[in-house]
Length: 56
Image 1 (cartoon, rainbow, N blue to C red):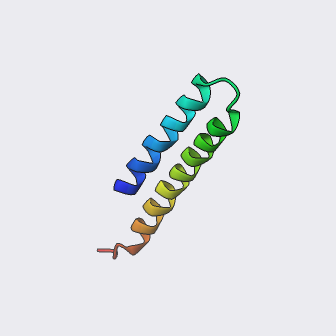
Image 2: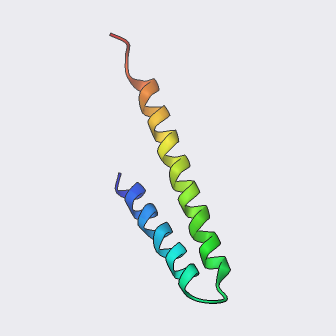
Image 3: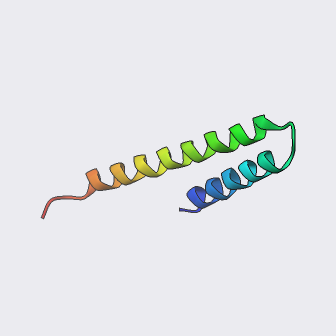
């Protein structure tokens, strides 16, 4: 969960910096890609967790 929160904060910070500073669109795009990767990581982790639980 620490990795998820770290990636989330880093992505939001990069998007904010990219939006505030003129001429650094690549920073904003890296932030958006990082947020997408973070959501994919969360989805993969939740799917992986649900398949490991034995049926009762």
